[in-house]
Image 1 (cartoon, rainbow, N blue to C red):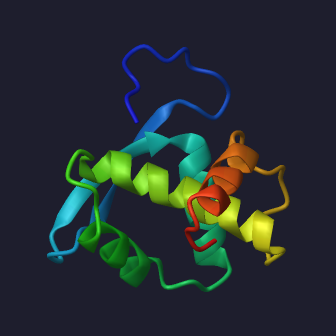
Image 2 (cartoon, rainbow, N blue to C red):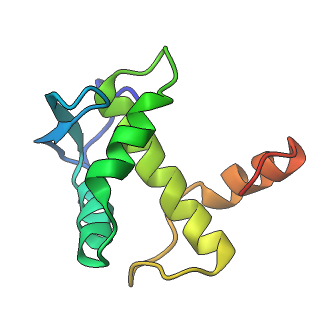
Length: 111
């Protein structure tokens, strides 16, 4: 996700944190505050986010950098949790989730 021309709104300011990539090397992920909010919620639930980030980086689309991939997979995971009725954060479903889920269903992809 490219941020150069995005107007910053509450929660969209970019923040960098160090995470280990699929090679076990610390890399800085620069993603919006709202993405870190979901990441932190996952940590609070006891999810193994170190392994989760490593797995997400292992299957990263070649056109995405580390930060873009982390932002995308966090957003997609949150959308899928809302759709499947799983434990979710106490805030609203992320914007664009309905379209994302409907598109996956049309393409026969798992949710």
